[in-house]
Length: 147
Image (cartoon, rainbow, N blue to C red; front, side):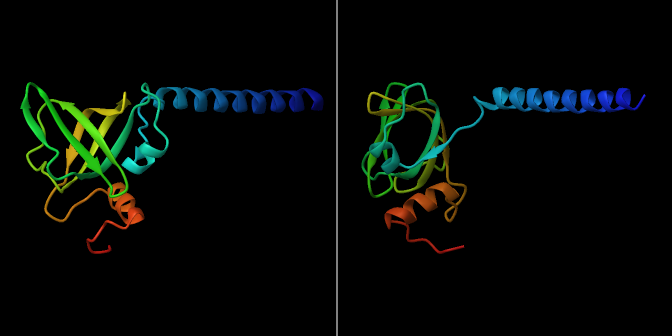
């Protein structure tokens, strides 16, 4: 009788562990496309990612690099002070998008150009995404106030 209870307890524990492993695997599989890593222009220049990898890039829109009116595609460069990456974006840019302002884009790096599928701009005159601030501080370019 005791061994039957002990055997049932072991079976329940094994079943719970298997269920936990399967659930963790399914969650990881479901999230694989939803996780976008942030990279600064210097990191991209040092180690270019694969063309199939989707990630986020952030930095300042380089002054004089914004080219509009060439069809649907808008071209500009993003810099963190250490490196500059050209960006192409098809679509409507946010109203607050401007040169020398912070931006974060989602997309992939193909043939030396970041192909953006989504562009986010600053919220107001003082906001800049934390990842962009950290990357600019690392390059010694950021001159905003510390928070």
